[in-house]
Each structure stands twice: as structure tokens, then as C-alpha cells.
Image 1 (cartoon, one colour):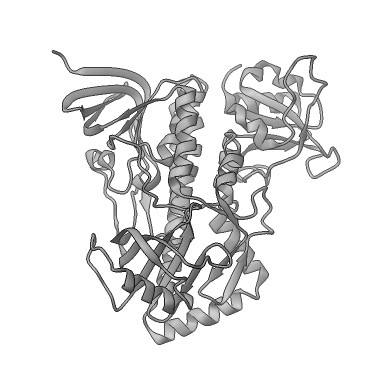
Image 2: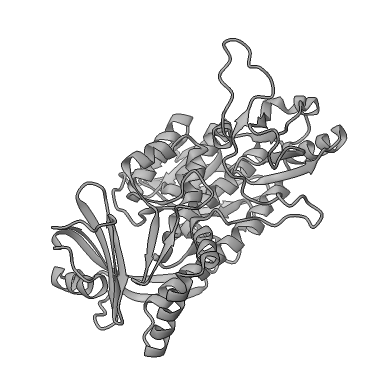
Length: 497
């Protein structure tokens, strides 16, 4: 009996948040997508809790953000070492907060969307081999004890920090361990923290309490004087003692249902692309849990790569477009490592001088609005921008906020209502062209473009025509462009009409 074989457009290895968002986007674009997941069953293990503003915007562009918020807890300010608060409430976004919700809830929404769009999810599929040639990629697996092969034009490894895809490609994963003996536990509390979560540090350790939303809390704790090996099961008394010192009280920790110990690495693969194979999420970069940047950076990797793969596979762009994934996302991953690394190193600083400096810097930062705002934009993701040509309009490469929109013309009777804001328009998975005037030159691209006008015709965009990528970044902009200039831009970004 011959081994099982499948042929698909894209193979995604890993059914975590990164892989599922990517698979859902590709399937929604009409592509054939197969997701290979080693786990035989869905997991309710939660590594990430924080969904930052930029990730919520991307989920909003997929119609998922409002449902996720219903089940989560928005937090509008963050406590830094018990000394300063970072206010997120003034962020220029529809989501001026960080949403605390277990990772499995985000995963479930993305899974439902991917399956509904037509993605094929194969669980219990362990990747054992990978080969690529000029035409595509072959992935070998073992499924239910039997060998199988899967063939696709492209493949994406979104299979986590211990990525099999990365190993099979022979790619290095340079970096170092940032902190050892991080303690994790799922517990109940006798008293809920006032803000819903609690974070703090003292001279010997740190602690964080985050709600699941069902009465259980995840506690993360570290103590320089109590270093346990990976996989050790910490006792409740030890966790409670660290919490009391770092947080001022232990909130009546009790009923541990699970606990473990791990170390946190800081690593990044030099190349996110190897021929026809890409790496995304933790397979490409990993760092400490400080700042909650891991899952969020992965979701944004997926949103950046998905529309580019779709454009190439549908013949609307050349393979060269895929090189921009490395150019745009590798620096973002590097920045996430720097930010997260700085947070955790300062938090676990050992010397008295460093701790004193930490206290001084945090106290000063709490009174410097510009510095605090910049930090909020960085951690939330809304401050991320991509490189742009030197002569480009200032908006190019920037994240576009959720513009209020209106239809360029009166909708026909029975036609669906025009989107009233940008991230509703992006739900079509297309580029969005925003202009105050009719743009007949764009008509040949009507099958891959949403056109709208800014709701405020006298606002900042009154004389500007703006072309927005499916991931919400400005691809091109010009003031009062001619028809030829607009056609050239649309051809460059959307392919020949």
C-alpha cells in the first residue's frame, strides 16, 4: 500500500495562533491550505495572556476582535515595578488597552475562522522530513503510525520555539538564556487584585498574576535565591512567599491545579526565508515573557506574510515580493527581543546599584509623558512602521489607524452597506483605496480593491489618495495624483489589471 500523499498551495506547520491566522487568511483568499499539527488534540495550555492593541486591530480586520474582547479583560494601564504606571488609555486606536485573555481563546477563534474558510487541519501529523526544489516543497510526516507526504508550492514553519521545520532547514537559532527558574502555576485566589491583575518586583524577585476569566489565575514568579531545574514542580508555599514579597500580598493563593518551572531564552533566526520555506512566530524568534510580546509578534508576522503569499500564488506579484517579509519583520523581531530583554534584565537586576538605577529611571519615566507614550506605542505594536523609499509620501510604511469612511457613490439597492471604517473594509482581504474623489482609473482592479472616501472630506487626507495594504499599512500615497500615476501604483501593488 502506497503512502498517503496530498498536494496543496501552502503547508503550514503548527496550529498555534500564528499558524492559524496565516492559514485562515490564505484559505479566505481562495487558496488550498493544509495545516500540520503534531498535537493529536486541541490544547488548553496557555502560554500567552496579553493581546496588544495592534494584534486586536488585526483581529478586527478579520471580524474577531469584538468577540474576543467579550471574553477577556481590558487593562488600560500597566504597573512597572510598583513605581510607575504606563497609561494605554490615550493610545490612538480603537483598542486603547491590553486585553487579558488565555491564549486558547484566541486560538479557538482563529481555528474556527480557518476551518470555516476551508483550511485543512491535520492533527497528529509529526513532521519528519522536508525537501524543496524549484517548483515546491515536500514535507514528510508520520500520521497514526503511517508515513505520509504533503506537497505544496510554499511552506511556513509556525511550529514554535523547538521548531522541527527550522531544524530540518539547518538554520541556526543564535541567542542565550535570559533567566532561569521561572515558576508557573495555575491557582485560585481568595481576593482578586484591584486591577484584575497584579505585577511587582522587589530586590530578590518578581511576580505576576493574570486572570483566566473563570476564577483561575496564572501566576509567574521568580526568585534569585530559589533556583529550580526545568520541569520541577514548585510548591505552593514557595510561590506564595515570592508573591508576598514582590506584590505586597499573596491574595490567598490556593488550589494549585498545575505548576512547572522553565527557563526563558532570547533567540532569533538570521533568515526568516529559506527558498520556498518561511518561519514565523516563535519558530523565528523567542524571548522572555516580559511585555507579553511573543504571541503578538507572531500574529503580526502571519498578517504580513499571508497577503504576500496570496498575491504571488494568484499571479498578482512576483516571488520577489516575498523577500520583503524578511526585510520588514526581521527588524521587528529584533526590536521585540531588545524590548523584552531590557524589561526582564532590569526586573531581575542583582546589584544594588542597578536596582537603584532601575528605581530612578522608572520614577523619572513615570513623569515623562513622551517617554511613556513611546513605550506604550512600542509594546502595543501600533508604533511599528516598515521601511519606505526615500522619495515616498510620509505615510508610506506606516500603520494606518481605523479611519472613518464613507462610500464614494450611493450603493445600489439591495447591495451590502459600505464599510464605515477602515478595519471593516479590510475584512475583504483586499487593498483599500481611500480618496475624496471618484477614481475611475482604479476600475480595472475592482476585483481586488475596496474603494472609499474619508468620512471627513476636509481632514488630513483631503488632498491625498492613500492605498492601504491588507495588513493595514500604507503601500502608497500621493497628493492629487494623476490617473497615470495612480495606475502605475495599482499595477505595482495589485498586478496587471
